[in-house]
Structures are given as C-alpha cells and as structure tokens.
Length: 264
Image (cartoon, rainbow, N blue to C red; front, side, top):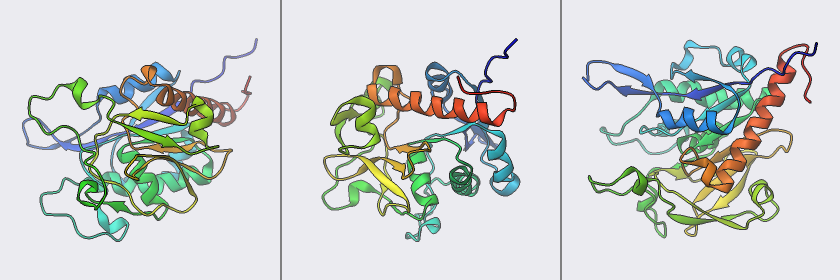
C-alpha cells in the first residue's frame, strides 16, 4: 500500500520580546502568522526561536521543508549592512539577526523554500549583501509607509489596503496573478535600499519602494514581500498565490527529503 506523502515541516520565525510583566523576554510571533500558513498550506508548523548561534543553521535547514520569515517590531541592526547606528531607543533583536541572516544563505544553498514577509523581505535582502533605508518617510520623494499613528486605530484599519504596487512585466508575481498591479497594505518603517546579490525586483510602490523580490533562480522559491501577506491571504489574490506556490515548493522538498516518497 502506497504511503501518503509527508506533510512539509515549515518553520515560522519568532521574535524576542518583553513579557507583559516586563521581567523577562519571551519568544513569540503573532498568531495570524501561523493561522494564515495553516489556512493556505497543508503542513506542520514549527516556531523558530531567535537564538542566534545556538543552532547549526545547516543542520536545521536539512531537517525542514520551508521557512516563513515573519514581521516584527525590531529592525535588522545596521551593522549587518554598513548603515548608520540606530538611536539608543530603537528596538532590536540580535538573536534573530544572528540566526536568520545565515539561515537565508543556507536555504539558498540547500534549495529550501523561503517566504519573507515585512521584516522577512528585509532579512533576505541583507543576507545577500543588500542594505536598508532606516526610515523611508525621511527619504526625499518617499511616502510614509508606516501604520496609522492614532491610538484608537482598529486592526482592520491597520491592515487595510493602502497603496498600489506595480508588478514587474514577465515576472513571477505577474505570472501568478495575471495582473500588472495590485493593492497592498503598508505597515513598515524600514525598506529595501540597495538590492542584494542575485535578487530580482518583483513589485514596486508608486514612490519607488521595493515591495516584492525573489532570488534569481526559477527552480527555487526564495521570495520576499514588504506588505503583510498573512493578513487575510485568502482575500488577496497575490498573497494567496504566493502562499500556494510556497506550499507546493515545500511539499516537493518534503517528498525528496523523506526517503521512499515521490511527488505525485
């Protein structure tokens, strides 16, 4: 009797953050990151703690079938891309930086799928030698891409569709949707500046901010988006298509990783 194909094991990156009572740090991610993945991909999710050099990234990558790099309050520290120092009060997550940046490179080497969202696109770019704008709204000619600043803002307002992005002609995003442009949400302060080695731009906002990219290898799924694709992905054709393509790549990886299984 033929065994069913194995469900892919997919790591979802977590962040270090202060606990509610402020006595210690916890490792966590927003539940919508996991729920969106489970809604769109038949898989087994595993949270990835931001523990830096405490884990061998090559061994980790060899045991997994895909990685979701989530957003987070902390920004990638500028010493990773030669940027000016952060202000003293800037939130940072050095454990996540130290783990995820080499992890991205290990995934590319091992051909393991990666889907980076918000901070995740920035990590992919920095991991491959790119740089970031610290505050996009302070760059001449750029708009303010941050979330609404009001204290009474609702979740729906935070994640509402905010601006258009133009999809690269002949690119992956255009091929997945059949569209030349899409509306997306916008909740970020930092953004891609100098593009990392081997990366291709897939989507750009009207003010020239890179909103989507991929690694230049059609046989791999290494994709990053600046918007929060985990927000109601089933209602956004591009986000849904990207989750589906990521899930298929992870399924194929699982079939090859687990001996005795073959892709249907």
